Amino acid sequence: MSNPRALRRVVVVLACLGGAGAGAWAWQHRGDPAHAQATSAGGTKDPGKGRGPAAVPVTVATVQKASFPVMLSGLGTVQGFNTVVVRTRVDGEIDRIGFKEGQIVKAGDLIAQIDPRPFQASLDQAKAKKAQDQANLANAQLDLGRSVKLGEFATKQQTDTQRSTVQQLTAQIEADEAAIANAQTQLDYASIKAPISGVTGLRQVDKGNIVNAATQTGIVTIAQIEPIAVIFTAPEERVTDINKALAAHPLQVIALSSDGKTRLAEDGTLAVVNNQVDSSSGTVRLKAVFANKDHALWPGLAVSTRLLVKTLDDAVVVPNDAIQHGADGLYAYAVDPDNKAQIRKLQVGAANDQTTVIERGLEPGDRVIVGGQYKVKPGSTVSFKVADGQPPPAPAPGSPATGSAAGGAR
Image (cartoon, rainbow, N blue to C red; front, side):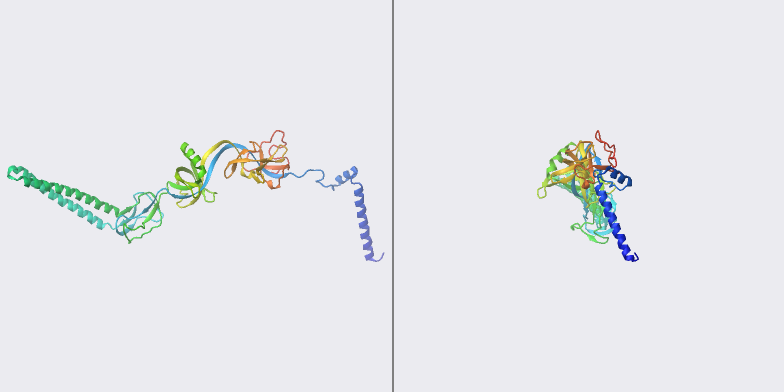
């Protein structure tokens, strides 16, 4: 054929006829063992034909028996163990400020100095008055002594009058001593000192201002932060448990950041359970005390708390990731000796951020799936790796696996 287009048509028709013939031959000999052997030798057989479903890769952990601390979570606020608004007790002009804002001061440190001259003058005046009265008393005592010596030459009235004068001047000196003590106190009040140790806040009054005892505005606020207190709440239904535990031994309190991710202090001790439950919120207020040597807790800081109420010995615990929520309640996938997933319905108890106590449904040593459950169905064959931080699971007798299943994910 000299026509190229006609030649191409013939080639296409022959190729189609050849393919159709090969397909018909394969269909007719699909059950022939020789054909199957030839196909396998040629590498064209479906590799999945004749095998079961592929194993589902998962992560497992072992159910363990351990001591479990029962923690009661709450929200709270840090406050100074003692907080004092430092105010003046006398009137006058501030000569000097003795602290820096935010400075840690000790009890007795100078906070501010009021002009002491008026108070010093009052003290000097009281002392001079006492000296004057002491001189008068000495003279009166001499006169009394003369009257007594004169005997019958001095009238009884003169002697009694002189004795009364001595008594009056003695009482006057006692009043002078009280006036001196008062003046000394006023002078001492001119030096305003820290009543407690703590950290100072923002200064409310500057040097040169006139202050008086009648004003409500203080000079500065001092908050004691070593130790420091945390006020938090607990549900009213736990009050009885808390009181019983507190009567038996001190209760530990842990303070965390408000999001619960960072531990701020672990050395807290429950100090007070408030004497009344708040009926509007159904909670009771608690107070814990922390040493706070590193100043991680600061007055006004919002925190979350963990109160250690009791410790359960030999509790059956699993990681929280193993517990699933279903229409019939809580359940977990357990891996049997044949590495197949089985559903276990659960009854749980106390829980914390990492683990949960299992009251019924699992036993120590059981293998539970903690990752990859979304691909698992009851009866699914699984291949597994051990979760981080978990001991290698001990397979049940007869299990073909000793750490991770054969062909398991690693």
